[in-house]
Image 1 (tube, rainbow, N blue to C red):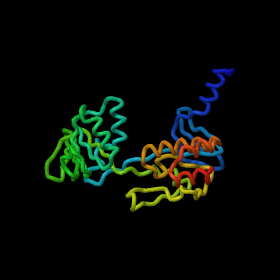
Image 2 (spheres, one colour):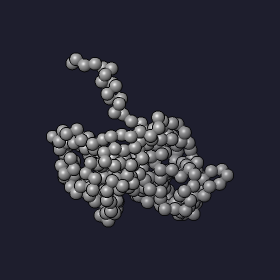
Image 3 (cartoon, rainbow, N blue to C red):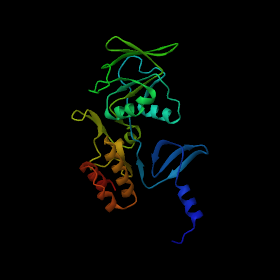
Image 4 (tube, rainbow, N blue to C red):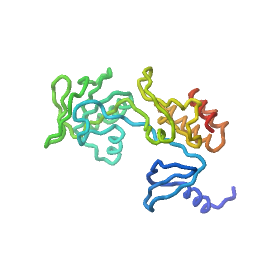
Length: 243
C-alpha cells in the first residue's frame, strides 16, 4: 500500500476530540468544552454512546462520602487507591462479578438481596459517617466499619443527552428497568442523532457492544456489515429506519 503515514495520522487526529460535550446541538453543529476553549464542531450526524449507570440504592446515608458506584470503584482500583475495608452492596450479576474479582485482595463484606453464596445480610439499613470512616448498619442489627461502600444496582440508561434530542424512555415492568421507547423503528424528532449501546436500554453487555459496532458501521454507510452483526430485532429495525 502506498500512502503517507504522517498525513494519515493528521487526518485521524483531527477527528479525535477530547473534552466535555455540552449537549447543545442545533442545525448540524455541537459545542465541546476542551482545554483549548469552547469548540464548535460541525457534523452531519451525531451518535450518543454514553452508556448506563447504577442509581444510588435506597438506604439512609446513601449520599455520604465514600458511598460509590461499582463503576467509580473500578476506576479507583485502576489507580490503586481503593482500600479496605469495603462493603459491597450488590443487586445485579455485574456487581457480583466485580465483587468476586476483588474479594481476595480487599476481603470485602458482601450485602445483597440476591441469592449469593457469600451473602451475610439481605440489606443495608443505613450508612453513617463517623470520625473513623463509615459505619454500616445491616438489617440484622449488626454494624460494619468501612472506608467505602460500593453499590451495584440495576443499571439504567444515561438518558439526559438522548432525552434532550427527543428520545423517550419508560419503565418496563417485565424487565424491571428503564428502556428506550422509540428505539424500535420510530425516529426521534431529530433524525440526525442516533443512540448506541446500553443507553438504548440494551443492558446485556455483549448485545450493547454489538449494537455499538452496528451503529458505527451504519454511520459509515456500510449497512451490510451492520446487519450482519444480527443485533436484537428492535435494534435492527432502528438501524434500518434511522440511517
